[in-house]
Length: 181
Image 1 (cartoon, one colour):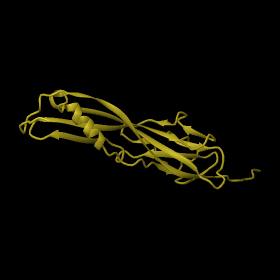
Image 2 (cartoon, rainbow, N blue to C red):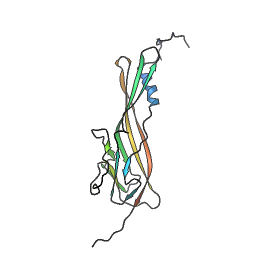
Image 3 (cartoon, rainbow, N blue to C red):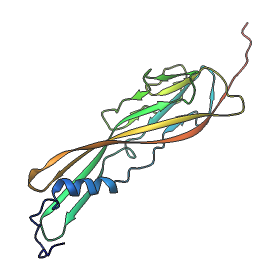
Image 4 (tube, rainbow, N blue to C red):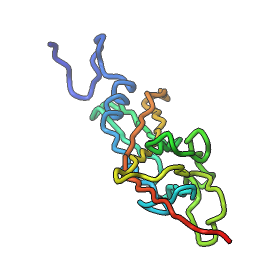
C-alpha cells in the first residue's frame, strides 16, 4: 500500500501503463453475435449448395477505450473481424471454399447473398451436404475470428490475442428422389 496524489501515475513497478489499460479494455470487448444468413435457412437438400454470407453492416470493428482519469493515460482496443470459418457438423459435406475459411470482401461483407437464378452456381461461401439427416440435424458451426489491436498514450500500440466466437445451428438435410427420362 502507498499513497498517491490524484491525477498522477505512481512510480512503482506495477503502475498502470497504456498496455495495462488495453488489456482491461480487451476484457470488455463485446462483439456482435455470430449470425450468418443461409439460403436455404434451415433445411438443405443433398448435393445442392447452401449459401452463407454476412452483411457488412453487422460485420464491423468494435472499439473499447479505457482511461485513468486526470492522468492523460488511455488505451483503445479495436476488434476487427478478419475471417469466417464454416464447420458443417459432419464429414459427409463439402465447404466452399474447401478450407471452410470464407474471405472478407472489399466492402467488409463475407460471401455473397443468394439471389434468384443462382441455383446452378457454386457459392463463394457455403456448404454442400452429401448425405441426408436421419431425424437428428447436423450442427453447423460458424466461427468469426476477430483480430485485436490497441493504441494508447504517447503512440504506444500493439496486438493482443485474436478472439474466435462461434454459434451452432441445426441443419436438416433432405433427400429428394426423382426419375429422369
